[in-house]
Length: 108
Image 1 (cartoon, one colour):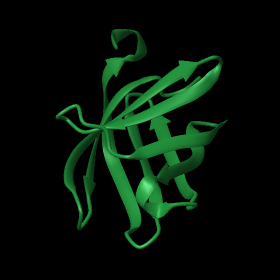
Image 2 (cartoon, rainbow, N blue to C red):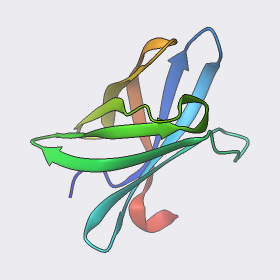
Image 3 (cartoon, helix red, strand yellow):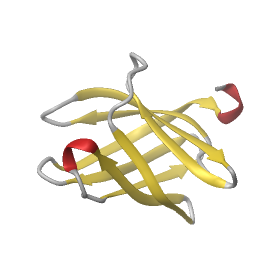
């Protein structure tokens, strides 16, 4: 499995600009991804249908305000750096780059 750990990413949208953490874990042999703000609050995104393709995890995200929407999601890991995007309806493409690993998986 790739990208396991807690990643600090920066996003800049009209609704939120700042850091967010992406926690990539393993549960029952499958990827488990959680988004979290620095305050510890978790945005209302859930991640599913996760697949590993080379150094990239792809899947879909869902948000309660966008009922029925499957939001394409991808994150690419290169060593201790990460980048990726979410293509959110109405909001548009949310890109993040220069993500850094802040905790190994075993640290949380």
